[in-house]
Length: 540
Ligand SMILES: [Ca+2]
Ligand SMILES: [Ca+2]
Ligand SMILES: [Zn+2]
Image (tube, rainbow, N blue to C red; front, side, top):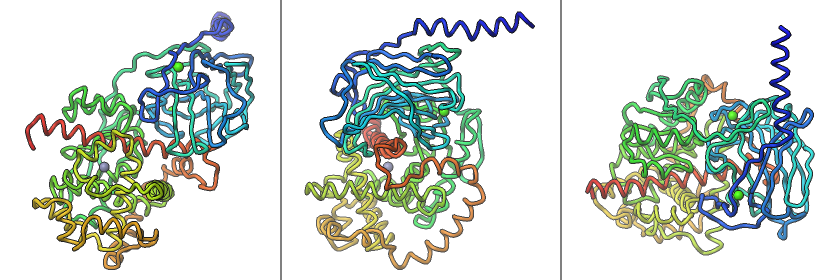
């Protein structure tokens, strides 16, 4: 027994000895990225060069060394900068109350975050507690180019063994959703692991392809052991969307296979294995998202939420209805997918709040386009080539928002049946512009002008003849969910935000919305992939 105690003593002592020396984790110079993951430039104090995490006394002491001295204020009051330790306290990528942003945090599921914040001349240290969705202040020290953050094990749920990633992020617009300007992360791939006081660099992670099945009425959801709750949530999202979409699209797809992944890297392997992607095609998705469903098989990225699942499923319902028409009227394909998923998920008591934010962000995007007199003419968003080009140019936030609101306006003013007739005309060989003219007796330009002049309530009013149908089935759908979604309460609490809150203080808000943009970017990638594939196969 005494031997055992002594051994235990050694285990606790040794790491402390190691920590006194302090392992230093190094990061490259000049490796900043923009929000799409492209190389970017930024001030030296945004560039991580070295870091460490040690136990000192009863606390954790995290140090980040930068390439330049940390300023006491930003030159512009709208700039928000944070230096973070992103912590996966349960070493489980599937639990991530902070949100999913694999481009920045690689393969971890962030539960807690310790950070130094700088907004204007206001500087503070804090911990974000993901499970509780709360913040509290922590101590920090600054010395030239070095930041020290002090937090205790209880600040991170008592965890003594966790994974982490170090981040520096600079936002404009006081930390607003789409305003991430530049960031640096360490390590470049995967994560650091802290165990028994010692930090190691995790350089490999075994691929975990979903190998367990969970049956739902219209889908088999494949997942990994330990990821049951996520699989159940995504399965419920799928069924919710499926029930809802049948109201607008009578022809239903056959039973789906839904693959729920723990990490984005696993998804990439899944694309290769289950959908026959080449490694380079699959690699398009390395920074997030997933392709639209292919042959009734949906790949669910770790960052997907209910909206994403409904969006992807809508694409399949549209294909069931009008075949490959979508390739030649992208603004309507994507607009309808956003409209249907917004409409569907906003009826859900657990997720409706997220949709309010989604709608607001789309309205902001279109307001901004209008103020620059830069709304896209619809004939510039017609082919998948055009759509893909805008995505690559980093305009996904704008084109998806405009497409969504135009689709919503069309359905509000002309009804879903007319909108579907447009798809049918395109399927029968009409050009998008001709189809719109045939069905609505107006040109695409006239439609866009109407849209510009429409008020928000006109864009979102319910078209009269469909009201009755939607209302009655809504009730039905609500009943289905209320029975099954008790486990979702926590998730909702953590993602529901007060919109009056200053954005900069709310990382989850930033995160979720930034994520939307990223999801959209990745969704767009499929257009490019699809084009390549069709070229390869000579289908067009
Ligand atoms: Ca760096
Ligand atoms: Ca986690
Ligand atoms: Zn889409």
